Image (cartoon, rainbow, N blue to C red):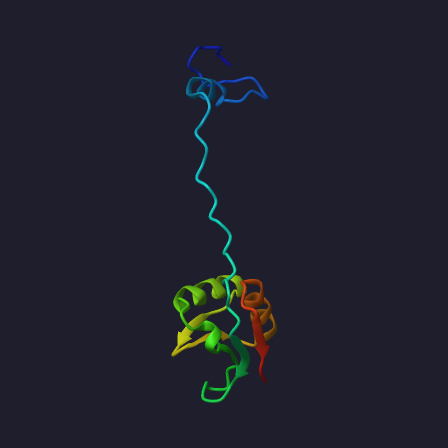
Length: 122
């Protein structure tokens, strides 16, 4: 092998980016991670979590509804619930609907998000 200046050879274990890092210096800090969701303050109204199958082609869904959800952005809550549970979620009227039997998981998730009175229905 020829030992020319531009052959691209390097010694084993050497870092090819060392020279670039030395030229650039310290990098600026990255973006700040998003703040964790804050629990809803003063939400003492009831949220009922229940399963339902009637009128849904035999498929089970989990509904969260009640006065505790009033004034909340249900579309955003549905997106967060879908990501957290790994299932589809949507808003129907004033209820949050998740695919499948997620009643225990949804009740625990809502309680962790600051909903004080989460009750399980059927």
